Amino acid sequence: ATPTALMVGTGRGAQLGILIKGPEVLESTRRVDTVVLDKTGTVTTGRMTLTGVVPAPGVDATELLRLAGALEHASEHPIARAVAAGAAARAGSLPVPEAFENLPGLGVRGLVEGREVLVGRERLLADRSVALPAALAEARAAAEAAGATAVLVAWDGAARGVLTVADAVKETSAEAVSRLRALGLTPVLLTGDNRAVAETVAREVGIDEVIAEVMPEDKAAVVERLQAEGRTVAMVGDGVNDAAALARADLGLAMGTGADAAIEAGDLTLVRGDLRVAADAIRLSRRTLSTIK
Ligand code: ADP
Ligand code: MG
Image 1 (cartoon, rainbow, N blue to C red):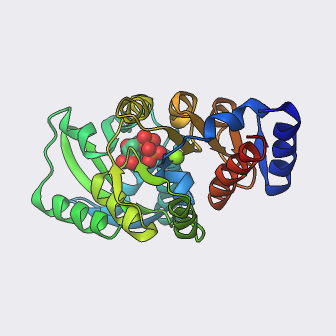
Image 2 (image 1 turned 45 degrees about the horizontal axis):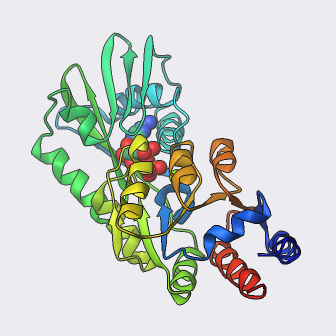
């Protein structure tokens, strides 16, 4: 590839809203056949809201919201922000936790008004031998079937309720996926979220291959596994938890609307966070390279 042709490519990229780290980046896109898409914040807006509150039998809904909201208030996770905002709106002022610990990919735990509180996904509770009563298991399944994320709340060793948070699929995501397919690329949805939620989102945007319930530190290993299968992988992500996978991928595309760590790890930045531009980026680089062959 001649430097001049590659410079033309990067200039055109800027016009399309693509920031390219260096001209050599375009070279690696040539053989890309698989595009791994992070779910939250990439395919979906990442702006979650609290949509449901299901207390366990005998638990007061306001109490459930106060204790869960108090802990989530200390976390920056999009789910946590939705829970804290929804809890404050419905239950009023939230207590300040006496202790707090963030457990990446699982949830949060801490001490609120002398109670040991857990807020997060089922594994967080299961790892501590907290069982889910039938009424809550049903609420969780119903939420997930509808594409919402179920957040489980427990304190003092028992499950106390399910909060549901929902995040809308971006209007442009289905079109973005069909543009990627039109380029002959296979889209794969990758998320730490639950399989049922992931499959609902995948169906909505037209993705067949879903890799769900992946811990943040394992996202890069998933990319590596696909590469070991002989695939050349582009990864699109927005979160701190996507940074290692973006770096590991043959081509890392960061959402410009995402975390600094993701932008630093990516080869390209989609400035406006528009997923359709991912297809433009791959098409542009193919064209740039074919003019110099
Ligand atoms: P994603 O890959 O979708 O960006 P994460 O890896 O950050 O998600 O988290 C994986 C899952 O762990 C979430 O879908 C959620 O169920 C749970 N989780 C993580 N952090 C929190 C939190 N602060 N509150 C509630 N649930 C959480
Ligand atoms: Mg994300």
